Image 1 (cartoon, each protein chain N blue to C red):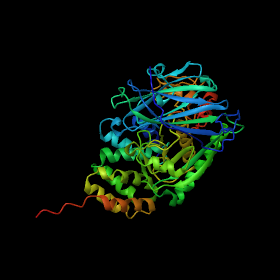
Image 2 (cartoon, rainbow over the protein chains, first blue to last red):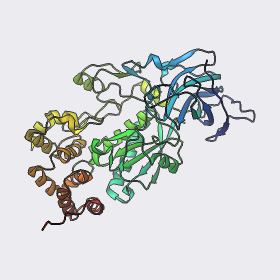
Image 3 (cartoon, one colour):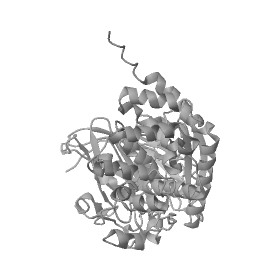
Image 4 (cartoon, one colour):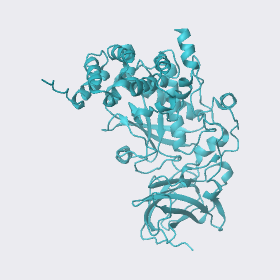
Amino acid sequence: MRSSVPVLFLGWSLLACTGTGSTGEDTAQCDGASQVSTLALTSDKNGSVDIPVSLGESDAAFMILTESRTGLVSTDGVVDAEGNVVVDWSDWADSKESLTNAFFATDEVSAFNWPIREEDGTLSAGDWTVTASTLDSGGYPKARQDVDVTVIRRACLGSTATLPITIAYAGGLEDDAEVSAAVEAAAERWEEIYGALGINIQVSWISVDIDGSLPEPLTGGGDYAAVYEAAGSTGVVVVVGDDVAGASDLYGEAGGIPGPLLASSHSVVAVSWLVHAGGNARFDADEIEVFAETMAHEVGHYVGLYHPVESGWSAWDAIGDTKRCTSGSACESALGANLMFPYPVCGQECLAQTELSEGQVAVLLNNAGVQ
Amino acid sequence: MLLSFALASAGPAYELLRQRDPVTCGDLGEATPALRDELIGLTDPEIRPALVHIRAANCLSERFSADPVVQGRFAGWMTSSETAGLALAVLHRAGDMAPEVARDLVGRAALSPNARVRATAMQLALTLPEPAAPTP
C-alpha cells in the first residue's frame, strides 16, 4: 500500500477565476481559467507517491508537475474518483505509440497532463489520484524522497481557446533589425496557422540576458528557469537564439512532451534563427514560412503532440485519426503536410506543413496551458 | 548550379542533415574527399531547407577543418555578406579547431561586412588561446 505525507497545501487563483467561492468549490463555468495548488509529499518505501487531485464540476484538464531535488521522477498513472485506473504507464512502456514523456524517468521534473487525447474521455468531479515514482539515476525506485508537486486545474474552455506565448530574444538579437523583423513575421504567420486550427496565440515579447548559443531544453538548461520567471508567463516561452544544441544545429527543441507550465530547467521551447536563415543569414519568404512552422511545431510538442510518425517509420503517435504509414515515401505522401511531420519536405521549395487532424487539435485543447 | 544542386540534394548527407531531429556529423560516415565535396555542395544557397547549409558548414568545421580545400572555403565565407550565415556557423565551432586555423578565421571575420559576424569574431578573439612563442 502506498503512503504519502502531504505537509503543505496552498491554493490560489493563477488567473481571474470567477468560479471559486469561499468554500473552494467550483461552479460549472467554462472560462478556461486555471487554479494552481502546491503540495510537498514524500514517496513511500517503494518510491511511490500518491498525488491527490480534487476536481470540481468545471475542471476539464489538469497538469501535474512533480519535482525532486534528489533524483529522477516519473508519472505512473491516474485513478479516477470511482477508483478506476484510467491510464497506466506499463501499458505504454514498450508500445510503438507514444502518449506522454511523463511516463519515462529521464529527469528531476515530470510534467503530466490529463486528459491527453479525445479518446481519453472527460474528467468527473471528485477525488482523483495521480501516481508518481522517485527513482535513482539507474531508474530503480528510491524510497522516502521528498517531492514538490504543482497541480494546475483548468476549467472547460469557453468560446475561444487562447495559448499565451512569450517570445524571448537571447544573445542581443533584439538589436538585430533583420533578425527581429523575421521573427516577428514568423510569429504573425504562426498566429495564422494556429488561428486556422481554432487556437488564438497571444504573443508577448521580452529580451533575456543569456548567450545566443542555446542549450537543449529537453535535457535541461541552467538559465531556462530564470527565463520562464522573467516571462512572468502562464503559457509557453519561446527563446530565440543563434543555435540550439551546439553541434546538432537544431531548428528548435521543446522542453518536454508536454513541457512544464512552471519555472524549471526545461521550461522553454528553444529555436535557432540561423538555421532558418541559412548560409546567407537572410530570410526569404519560404524561410520565414519554415521558421513559423518550426515555432508552431515545437510548441505543438510542448503542449503534448508527438510526430505522427517518427523518422524510422516504425513508431507513431497514439492519436486515432492520424494516418499510419511505414516508409519514407508513403509517410511524406500521407503526412508531409502535417504540422508535426518530423522534417520539412522540400524540393526546390518546401511543402507547407500546417495541417493537424481533429485528434491532434484535441490534444492541444486538452493542455492545461490553453485557456 | 542546377546540376550541383540536384546531385547534392539527392545524396545521403542531404537525407540525414535535413531531419528536424538531432543528427551528428559522425553519422555521415567516413571523412572522405567525396563526403567533403558533398558537404561543400550542400552549402549552396539553392538547397532547401536552409538548415542543411548550416549543418553542412558545421560538419565541415568538425571533420574537415584541417583540409586546405575547406580552409579556403572558410576564408571566403568570412568576408562575404552572402555567406554570413556560413561564417557564423563556422565561427561557432572555432573553439574546436586548431588554434592557428581558428585565429586566421577570426582575423578575417573581424573584417566582415556583416555586423553579427564581426561581433562574434570580436568575442572569439578574447577567448582563443594566444599563439605559442617562437622557439629559438
